[in-house]
Length: 214
Image (tube, rainbow, N blue to C red; front, side, top):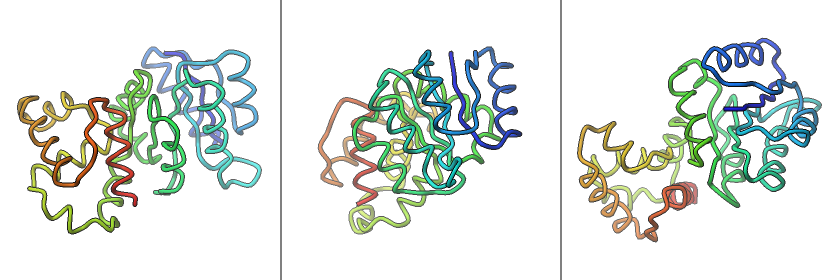
């Protein structure tokens, strides 16, 4: 996988480069600000970019705005955004147009190397990745608590994994059940929450996240 990294912390940036290269990936650029990332992508687009939300000069949302621009100008490039905090607005903006090949992770997740590498692979393959902590906060804050009360414990678990971007196959493997059992739970979730059914995993994720975030 060809990757580019945009992270203003030199220590974290170097650590990411080392980790990814040790895993056999090619890091074609590692930069410290959003403008440098956009310039590097314009020169030779990678497969996936890893982008910090807050970068110079204002350390607010430069990285997010760069990610949104990349989504518009280079839709074939996967974007995995890293954030120090759970910021629902940023996640919502990323998903506004298209959910293919996009991810939003908290920086703490990098320390869980296997999870981080798995997220990169899923974004590279066109999937959607949402940090479990972001999903947990959405579940805790949603106004649809009455609807969620209609779900069984297993259905709520399936809903949570769907919101993180896992496919039915991945959910079945995590729960040690059959794919058909997951499909049954998924259909029940969509029926009880009155969500439109869609066979596309990414569109399904978007429907769930919009439901939780509304």
